[in-house]
Length: 187
Image 1 (cartoon, rainbow, N blue to C red):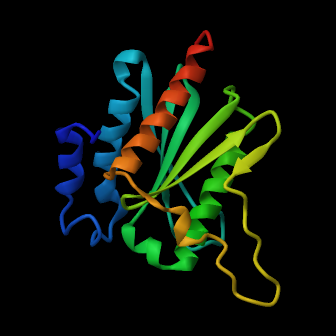
Image 2: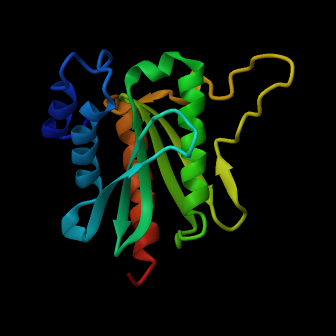
């Protein structure tokens, strides 16, 4: 089942097309619209964009993270990068590192048994989840080989498109899992 037309239209209206956009901010509105659909404000969810400055000494690459909260408790998050990052292993590795850093930052404040995060390279998605009880983050990190240049964030991890039937199904499934966990709390 596809997204409602108004959501699909926000993605399709991106200037230059979905795969040619070089500015990740063009995706902020469409993803914010999607998150508001999945986590409605009428159910007391709040989508909070946060702008993270890179660590001292790193190149300037501000990251915008959309954190879905319920009563100021983080329950889901999304990081967006431009679609061109999909074709460069260094860009995918940076996106993967940023996701892992975000999970590390949230690990001590998350109250749900599992927190889900989503890395979007344009409309291509990689789903992450952190299980609090055993400290497992999935997908597992691929360590760099000491002798060879291996791909530590394979393109195949971003294997779903948010506008495909499979992408809609997976995103809906994750959102429903999050809402079911939230329902178990008295926030």
